[in-house]
Amino acid sequence: MRITRLIMCVFFIMILAACSDFTAVEPKPSDMEKEEHKKEESNSEDHSNVQESKSENNKEDAEEKQIEPVTNTEPQYKLNERNWTIEPINQANSKVVLLTIDDAPDENALEMARILKKLSAPAIFFVNGHFIDTPEEAEVLKAIHELGFAIGNHTYTHQNLQNLSDEQQYKEIVGLSDRIEEIIGERPKFFRAPFGSNTDHSRKVAKDEKMLLMNWTYGYDWEKDYQSKEALADIMVNSPYLVNGANLLMHDRLWTKEAIEDIVEGLRNKGYTLVDPAQISQEK
Image 1 (cartoon, helix red, strand yellow):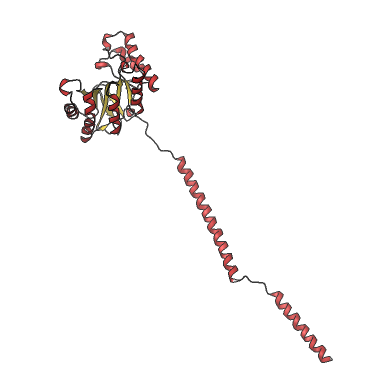
Image 2: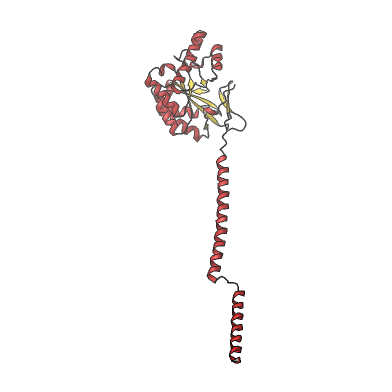
């Protein structure tokens, strides 16, 4: 009996010891749980890095959108009234010429404008009022302007201003500027008197109208010897008066239209750049 009790006591003590050892041991994560935990930490770090990277990129994009291109709106050239050439301001290219076309828009001006546009060749089209009297003629002027060309004032009826009264001169000049504004929505910035014949009053009117008065350095297409494509192109490119800043006079004529591409290419082959009228200062 005593032996039985002794055995039961020993057995009971062993059970208590086993229970004590079991509760003392903390559960450890399995290898798979460890890997999953590492992945979660890694993903969390990667996600954080991505968010930081996106934040930086968005910040850079925002900064780039705030940067606007800087364009030089200052005039690059000015008119020399002593010889009517175009002179560079500061460091602008000096080997340039200016193309101008008078008596527009008659029968050839629009096609000339299209040719010049194809060649990326800027020019001033000096307009006569009697060529824009009808709605159809007005549409031609509007089309030339929409091609990107400067429109100049060449008086309404192309009369010699020295033969007109002050009042008549005013009507010839201001009346045309009014008509041009009706058609293209802006007033001309350049004035050229017919035959280059100015008066004190025409100079004052042009100044009051904020137009730059200009004549030219050379032109030939009204002379009989140069009323063909070949002859005109040759003299315009090889004239002894071709100098840096030359102010070239041409007209709305069939032979001028036929020669205009050869003239542009010939001038460029000689190293000349065509001046954009928008870069010419309006100040004298």
